[in-house]
Image 1: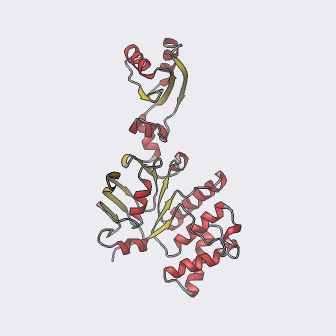
Image 2: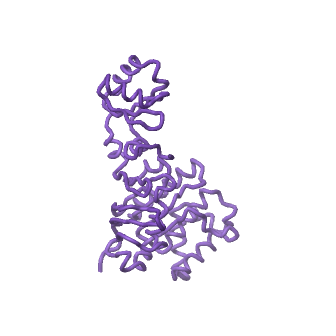
Image 3: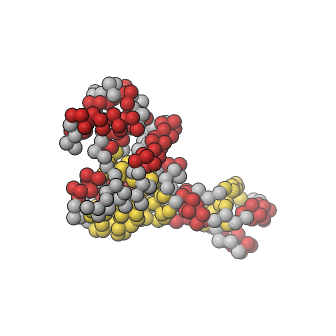
Length: 310
């Protein structure tokens, strides 16, 4: 029998349509065992459709999803048994205690008696909610509720945890706590974790990231690798006439700026020297200018030609 303890998740040539609208177009990437992988994209980018396909809520139309030796098209039940899923929408019953919520979830997976009690103690200990078992869910903070949601998804010992926008509604402190928990699960349980998010700072915490835009995979790699693709630093110029200034800069300095709305973006090493020359050459045309190291937002703009939220 294959060893299911360390399974690679493979997405291959995935395409999905809602009628005439293409939600995903030929998307391929791999999530390595015991890796925290971020699926980053704006609303409407295709994250939710991919999440629903991964969790078998939608049928495959074209392409393939594999988890270890199992193919979704051939054995969806085997893949479901290996997945733990935390949805964006709350799934806890607020009128029940934490323990009652976990008991009912365990029963759905055939867990009973002492085995279920021991497993509840184990997962709530990992997630720091063991002392909340007798507390009504409605009395918990948003961060604690999210931990209980994750505890539910871990009861049946999944090898791959999939979380859809896990920090929705959490304050910054609770978000930080959540990511500490995810890192602990990856390190201590060797669990593969796939997170969908629209937050750049969350994507930065992942080992690797795939960036979706309008159904297309536009970039993938570690945050450091993606930023390094741009190289050097990024200049952002604000101007009243982006096209005219872009032409003037190209003619004067041999540099081709990228136009994004009314902004011009220039990526290059030693950008500080160019900044001084630009301000000197076009003092009236440049309304504001900024210089920074590349971010994942810059990667997204470079790959798509528009801002993340456009």
